[in-house]
Image (cartoon, rainbow, N blue to C red; front, side):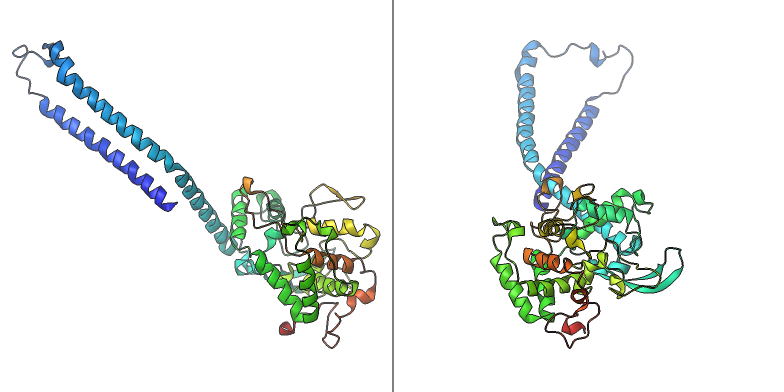
Length: 412
């Protein structure tokens, strides 16, 4: 690509040099051909002198002009196709330069402009934001360390438009402010797009996401992790993995294992800084270590609705589809609810299949497998049972837990 662009530029410079040199030679030749004026009518002016005869003009002079024109035509016929052949390489090179420029600008905004790095960490690995919690009257409740989710996997669960919406309008009631001009923030549309360009550059691979979940579960319950891996392997024919089985019909863990795994995935904030956790949005206080605890003045920090009793609002299949695919703004879900652009899809990559719109395609799969999403569904549909919400995962009864949140051994 770079070679093609360089060769094209070199051809252009050669043509320019030929034209310039030819003009200079013509100029000096005409300058030398001129003669000093010696007085009126002493010597006839050039335009009054008889020129060459027809025989001379139609002989060597004509042939020289014709051959010169033919030579120029031949050069043009050779050079123009070469120029056109190099055009795709030039275009690809220009696109690459634009992409690199946008990513570089996005990085500057992320680290120096909006300083997203202060909350979400370098390269979007997640971090902590200091935040003051106020009650509904604006009175101080507490100062907390709010866990900011990892962003190096955000474009697997949200599509670009959803990420753009959150950047523009923020998340009210959380440390995430509105950054776009549409939401009253300081960044222009171009700058918001540049931040998204940068986020694309730091997205982890599908393999990395799978290994992250597997290692995390293994750190809590190795036997459970092995059973999960076995079921995941048996689901090789699930549609998002290139097979023919619909995700909702995938093989599942036992009910006991689904409750265990669902509790781990739903509650834990240390797995990629809570970016796999449903609790960070649906459980008040989960993002700053107060999950499932009663609040005297305000249950603050739950961005999404409570899921206690969700089993009475939707069938298992409807529930699964929502978590698997996420919400679309303005579209109905369950029976009488309307979607918004802030509920992600954890099973399917919402950006896949949009390469024609310039959106990178990192594969059809999202952050979680079908078996893992089913585990979350089973856990959520049992939240009405207090013992399910607050009981430790089986096999870790001696490990202290907080509100069903079990940390891997290395983090305890």
